[in-house]
Amino acid sequence: MTKQQYVRTKPHLNIGTMGHVDHGKTTLTAAITKVLAERDGTNRYVAFDRIDRAPEEIERGITITIAHVEYETPTRHYAHVDMPGHADYVKNMITGAAQLDGAVLVVSAQDGAMPQTREHVVLARRIGVEHLVVALNKADLVEDEDLLDLVELEVRELLTRYGFDGEAVPVVRVSGLRALDGDPRWTQRILHLLEAVDEHVPIPPRRLDLPFLMPIENVLTITGRGTVVTGAVEQGVLSVGDAVEVVGLGPAVASVATGLETFGKPMERAEAGDNAAVLLRGVKRGEVRRGQVVCLPGSVRPHTRFRADVHVLSAAEGGRRTPFAANYRPQFHFRTSDVVGVVTLAEGVTVVRPGEAASLTVELGQPIAMSAGLGFAMREGRLTVAAGTVREVLD
Ligand SMILES: Nc1nc2c(ncn2[C@@H]2O[C@H](COP(=O)(O)OP(=O)(O)OP(=O)(O)O)[C@@H](O)[C@H]2O)c(=O)[nH]1
Ligand SMILES: [Mg+2]
Image (cartoon, rainbow, N blue to C red; front, top):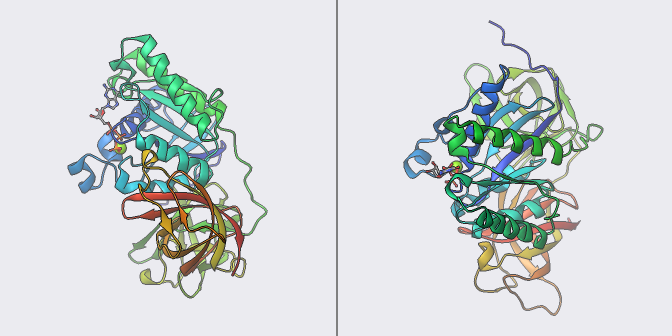
């Protein structure tokens, strides 16, 4: 049986839920799919345990890998990633955030902003998520309207402090849990939230004219067919039969895209903004990996040295408590990659303290695809040390 082709009827956007652990991101994601499924026939309900699905996650009750679900509003098609809130897994959040057109920041109305709320806002800002909508979740647990107003004010101030337009960001009071139960008061709020996303997150300019580039998020083997790489297309278009190159972290691998899919449906052409699975002819599983990029042959040369501006996270933002000095060696997360690098400080600077802005020169242990303007995060163990932007590629 041939599978139904993907039909492009509405603009496609990538969004996600981010926020502090346990504030209700996964519950809200499930509620969105349920409310939409009950409203019309194009949407499918994805239950909580289908989103939070890896066995380890269910045991510990925290989201580790990033789950993608899809749904449609009257005007748009969304791929939604439910990002983890636990501090250990912020690096997965970085992978997700790197490809988002907008995000729903989930804040528990009971607890207000917490360290990972701040950490995610800092990362969103630096990694290029320009448009946020706030879901003030668990609103069912707070009877007092004044208290809700206070939490909302606090969240708006936080957003302004980190460079978002805190006054203009929509804040919608929701209850993911009560909406899942089908309580009409709360299902209505979910629709309000989606309207806010439709209106507030603009359709980003898709760079279709640039050479094709897709960071690899996952590598899968399909028995009898070969190796498939998945990810969000960053720029350009790719048609079935096009030559590609896999670049970064080692020697380049040449191949041809012999198949393309999105959400399990075949398509002839993948374009910037799409979540795509690309079947690579003649490539063995071990030859390609997460962190590399699939691109038009010859269009990308990987680099190891660059100059960057960084914001060093304070302890209250989930960062270090102590300064770092020259020759510091954290992990660098660009798009889906994770490589070690050594830091050189600006002349005359001996240490960089949590909470400061700094200019650094970095030499990575392995070359990766990059260009000026690309956002990245610096991590050490469980901590996000800094969030930064490449200013200049050196070599
Ligand atoms: N009362 C109430 N409880 C909620 C609501 N949303 C979520 N919860 C509860 O809060 C707990 C955490 O919800 P999750 O959806 O797993 O939270 P999460 O943000 O995805 O958590 P992580 O992925 O681990 O960061 C669960 O026990 C939910 O049932 C809500 O709107 N109201
Ligand atoms: Mg979750």
